[in-house]
Amino acid sequence: MSITIGIIGGSGLYDMAELTNRHELTIDTPFGAPSGPYLTGTIAGARVAFLARHGAGHRIMPSELNFRANIYGFKTLGVERILSASAVGSLREDIAPLDLVIPDQFIDRTRGRVSTFFGEGVVGHIAFGHPICGHLAGVAHDAAVQAGARVHKGGTYVCMEGPAFSTRAESNLYRSWGAQIIGMTNLQEAKLAREAEICYATIALVTDYDCWHPDHDHVTVEMIIDHLTQNARTAQRVIAGAVTTLAGAPRTCGCGQALATAIITRPDAVPEATRLKLAPIMGKYLNT
Image (tube, rainbow, N blue to C red):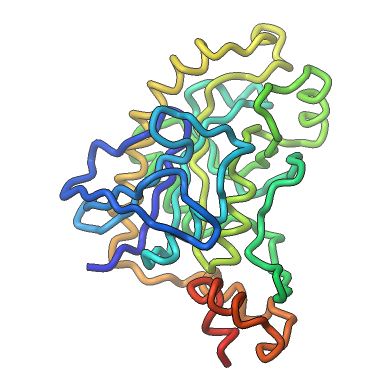
């Protein structure tokens, strides 16, 4: 049975209790090592691959993550959909700690992170106006409702550099932009998943109100870890429910053809080394 569903576990979610028939798989990529071995197994009869974003023991900072290797590894496994669980801060009074958000937009406030497979002789520009797979986000939202979580559908995720949390001025600026949540990791994953023609959706787990809130103006690691523990249990139920819905269901969105009109470079002009390196990502377009 092929592995078509990938799961990225963020802060607090380093394993999936529901995963049976487990096997660790180490994958080497042309972009270096992923965050760790992929834990493959079965949930609700479906084969999945789980990756702890920050590695065993949470040792990799957001700015240090090898996003390309992580997504490349999923692609080589045959993954077509990725559910990404991530800890976030809330920028809205009505989005409380322990709530879940299924965002549909991003604002990039990172600096210098690599977030594309293009380069080294091949140029392309993906459409990213709708950065989240709408169908996958809907499945995640419905699974959260079924799991009894308080969940918000839609919203903008500000992806900041970190590792320090926001200043209060920054937090209020993001609020003035109309954003709902803030985190440090998901924008690059979403871009690379789109280039790899993989559906992607975020299950954002709210840990705090960020520093804009007058009663929560000092975000602490202790506060976040306490909420992470509770959120992790909720996230596992939501992901298991989403996998149950997705198991065996064909893709009907356009994510699987994201590169069809994106690559500008003529196939015969792409260097052979680049063609080989990117074969799992865009080989069907470069070899025509």
